[in-house]
Length: 411
Image 1 (spheres, rainbow, N blue to C red):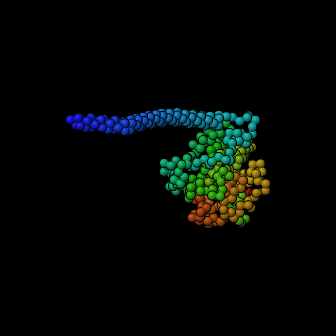
Image 2: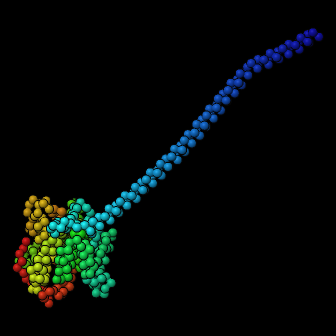
Image 3: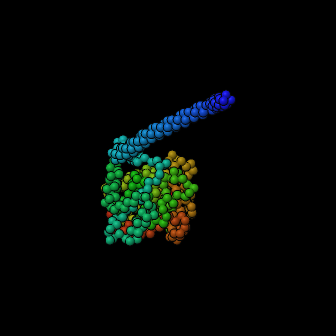
């Protein structure tokens, strides 16, 4: 009995000891696991809070950045609008100054023109094409060939402003552009022939506005920008002219005013060019001198065509160009330039700021004086030589305008 009780007591004691051992062994591990778990969960929670704060900060930064971008964009837009407004105001003021400003009362005609229409050689060629004809485009008397040429100038040069003037609109334009210089308006109004007026008009419109002037009996073969060679900067060029005549026999005096003659049925120029200013001065003074001397102006009834060339046409034009070349102050050329420098010209030649084109450029296919065919790379404009109204128009002091000989000097 006692032995049985003892065994039971020992079993209980052993069991209690085992439980104690187990408790001692496992309770710290569970506590440590719980601590690790708590620390890990705390770390995750902290990391999550940091991420949330970072995302929130990024969102705030993005919102702030967007607000700053919006503010900058609005400021830039307002600045551009203001710049555009100021530019419009400047242009408006400039137009008003051009139209309303008057040069000093004691200024010469040259000074007045330079004051109103100054020359800037570095500016671009204005994208204008000016033409004149006595009939409107819708008039049945407007020759189809001329109308095709007029259309071709617009088609070949998209983006250019193309204007066709008649007798009335050209007169109105002269009065508008030169209302501050009455002597020019008087000279224009005093010219006895529409031929002379149209010659004068081309110089006046180019001086004031620049661009291209082309006679109505011309047809463009290439776009205007192609006229300047690739090896020449447009900033170096202020005017483009072509050779009209390069006569190599003594009979030239019967037809031309000069041995070598620059054409003026096609001209490109920047506004205010000194050559244009000078020819306007020369024509104005010559016309008013004729009027003062004879009480009126009239053409030579015998040598009408040559008289036109000497008064407003290619003769006067050629003389003024050579005068410019040989004025060092204006052209910057040290050596003398003569007509011999342009005989047999086959490629464009830049003299000062004037680009002189060979006869092929504005007179291709005429079969004389070195003119090449219209498919030549330097053929830019076809000229029909068909403005017959020039020879049929009644002239003061004459019932006809025959082409006759002249003893005019060569340049």
